[in-house]
Length: 430
Image 1 (cartoon, one colour):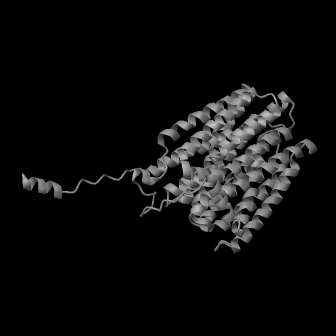
Image 2 (cartoon, rainbow, N blue to C red):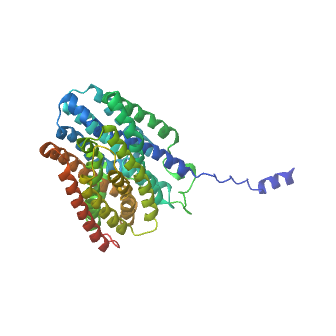
Image 3 (cartoon, rainbow, N blue to C red):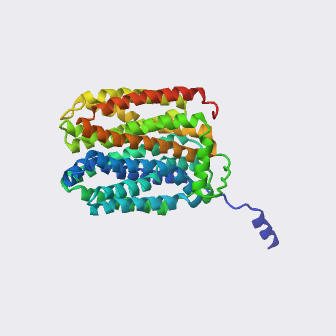
């Protein structure tokens, strides 16, 4: 009996087999669903612009102001959301954000005044969607992946395009057929539904499951979170603001927002409609932009793992500027090869800027990169908000959007200049 006990003590316990699928990919899949939904929820105002104008008599500038508030809060929320995720957990922050979106979009069916649109779609949906902005994707890829960070960042960024691809045609058909109120109810229900997989499957860190980040050979040090999320976000901003790199990234990304979400994302559909194109056709084109954006952003993530991020940004902004300068001559009342060529070319470049921008934040700011990127994203959304409002004013004043496309092309040239200056400081923080 004694020999049997000694033998049993000496035998090691059988090792647990390694899981065939690292849980990091499950977390990334949940994040993908969240970001797809978040992007789709934000797409509704552009689709409803003509319907709200016709029903309430609100000007395009008034309706665009709600979009501007939404885009501003979307950006300003991001750095604080990243700090809140560190302090209270990703799952709690994301679920609260989704329920805020559901509340804001649902309440719009009761509105009768323009300020209510600004409150519901501008403030509530802006705060909710901002809590799931690029800082969320940066947090997930940084915590769960050591290998393939650029690729995962690209895939999660492409979720925004996929959201437009899925939601834009559906919401456009609902607005045209059943009315804008039906569309916002669908958005509200979808935001609530997306919260379910977050509650069930989302985990905070690999260490919570006894795992290493994907591709890691040793456990990373768990960051010490002290003080309030607001204080930490402001401290990171103060430190980053001492760096020339931060300001160049923020300026170029502000132009990125101005020339994507602010202009094309908000005003492409009414601009195409001005040339006689049906809203559903224009929405389908914008969704097609999303198809090629998925391809372009994932490819950009792959490029970011292999090539210099600053040079990639120079190429992306230069190509975008050329395409926007050509756009006014491409619009027509029907689908023609030139506008389809624009959709393909511009779509590949839509948010291809995100993976290299995130990589530069990681290179220069280390562990604070998610919050720094949140502030850079805030600049992106402020740029988007300013141009969304100004383009609406230009439409009311001039009767078309032509001047805004030319101005956007010129802004892209400025972004190229910022990135050229960034090359000189890529080895350091100043």
